[in-house]
Length: 288
Length: 258
Image 1 (spheres, each protein chain N blue to C red):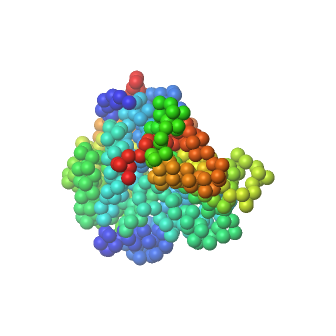
Image 2: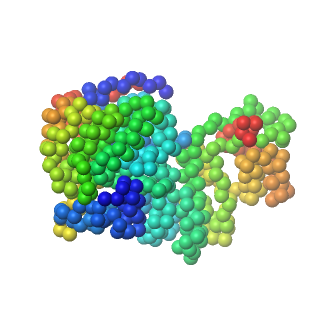
Image 3: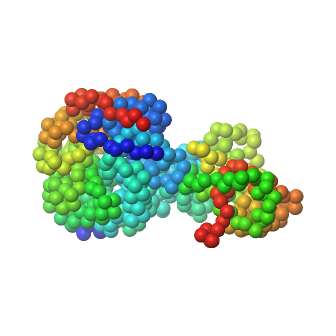
């Protein structure tokens, strides 16, 4: 299938996370969104319907490949087989963006399906910088690194997360995917100041922003925010998003929703809200 | 603080086995305890993996009950956590775990049903391959092709069971009635991808052995013998033609396929 060149995503309308329940409707109705983001690992199959779906979506929209399984913070390094599958997918899809997380998921051959927290130490920084170098060398292009939601902080800490990300950008040349919801969730759970966090992020490095809804759990009478991606974006997160736009300028933005996935129209409403804050028309869709 | 490899090792042990070695590394200020914070990560892991397994083994969930499956999944996850970040490949060891752990001892058909569901998953994800298309089916099959071996479609999987696994799968999916199930009537299953879905054929032993032999790389004549051993009236040409029509023959085997 012919792949048309991608526009610069920051110049397009807000994108949405494309998930299986919406694929057919997206292909049929071609909603006006700037781009689609998919989880890379959902398209690792050697054949069958999944790769076909992605190629059909790719013919209509710029695609952002968002990984959740590379475990960039693992001290033992990046899983070579996983990286090879990602490289193969990138070769087939030629995505507009490739992103992964400031986190780790496994060690000793075990891989858990979660974005586990890294200590903000020099040792961890050296590990993840080395792993990002490995990935960028393999893919022959820079990737974006996303700040995850945190439910704890470690006793030992050499720097803040914003300082850690800044140094990571300096050492590897990676860009940043700033998840504004995750900043809000982590700030609540581990008690830091969101404004100071935004101030500490190098503005030129932010290429994408994520927005999503979280869930409030009560533990021992205390509110804990869970990054469940199961709700509309909270008002406090919209406020933080406006501050982020003011600091970083207009930035490619994505609405994520992974649990209790609603009608496609709900995602589009959220994307159009972001477009309104960005002063954008929801315009981009390819004519194949 | 532990060096990062130790910290990560202890973190995983805390999630899977509630080993407390990592807890002193976690900040204690704040409103909830390090144990409660780790519980959030533990809950994420077990919920995500249990949901993943439920999606791969829906009929096993239905026939074993959701409550039982969640217990089974919990024990399985501790014993066999994922080995990679590709969650589509998680669950291959569940059928063997069910047999070895004794957890499904009272309902031994569940392990075979789970095995069928895992083969469906493998089939769904398998590579694509063109179907072998002779110019004329009749002329191809009557020619001297008996010394040829064939490469079958990558999505083909085979399962012999002492239980009616396909009927049980349909029961679990609400496509069959319990009155139709005779637990003593085993089934031989051919599982393969057709279009966007996975197809299952219940075949007799002669057909099963014939296809199994072809799939193992034996030449047509040897595979035909495997069928004849089960049924002297077996017609390998007829069944070979069916395989071609269904797109299950990918190509004639050559030296590169050895």
